[in-house]
Length: 249
Length: 211
Image (cartoon, rainbow over the protein chains, first blue to last red):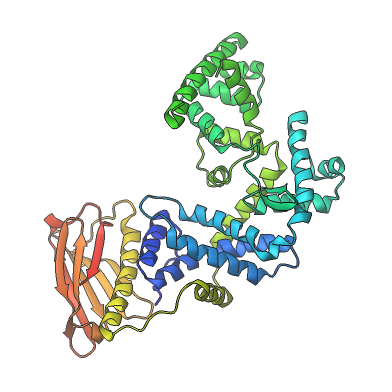
């Protein structure tokens, strides 16, 4: 049974939650509707992965992702307002990563991925800009194609590779990723007074020198230095308060 | 934590890889000023996150243009068979009820979507402000407004085995129970009249239960 509709189904949190509740109550048609809305994610990410793992059968990859989709739909918590679409993306990517099709290719992908990642991170700190593909190729000793493949793999999977005891598995969050800390900082800056947030953003994220900030805001470098200092003091207070509320420490 | 630690935190922030949630929010223009500045600062430095962002943008384009194919549906059915047990045979009455439940649940979804948007304008007398028909035409429903701002919701089905099914309809605080009755030889119908004073402010607060 399908619904006649004059408009294409749109993915919204409310619609997803309504369909998930119906499916969890036993309505199989609701699962079909969920697939109609979200299957494009399976098609897209399976396609991305199979392009770089030629021996992987795209239909087998999609099948693995479909099974993972159904399991998530069965257990997804519909009591809040969580974003099913975002969760299903991560679930699909994880299913592809864990599929037998990909398992055989992991070790090769891992070696190149690690070189590219470490080189990219060092380059950013050293030169304060991103490298070109050619520069990465030269710095890592890999071909341009190998660098591109490594970037492709990093973009396609949610987890990073790690080699432990000769096996490839999941990596615990890398030191250069810290979503909690980034969110804490972002939220803290948003709570600053506008004139303080402005100078913090300009100096530390836009990379403007203080002279330029002073010229743009029509004030002196001394005033900007003072404003930055006050902003940092206030940021510290906010972060300490938020950190205590979150962790109790 | 000292102020010099905060300063170091700020200096290092642009080197932190972006989470997928942040990249999606960036793609969808949902970041605040600080988040946006941090994301752009990092994307200026990182080929990896740039590639991840490119993929997410391509995903967005796919979402807008993709149409599920018969091959896709076949894959879905195979996946379902892999994990769902075969349904047990049930008696005809239970089957009839379950069938009706499925159709009315679909109707509910079709009601909630437009009424969860910001307030729809009131209708003229006799104007149909909402209508629904299942794709196979088995169930139809429509809502008619009147000049006194009352609302009448009509249900109609060609499934004659549904005669006698009782429906409990709730819209906000208003609740009414009706029974599908035969009209002529070809359909069963039911009608619910909601007086103006009982109309819910939140029109998407609705439930329909098959009793």
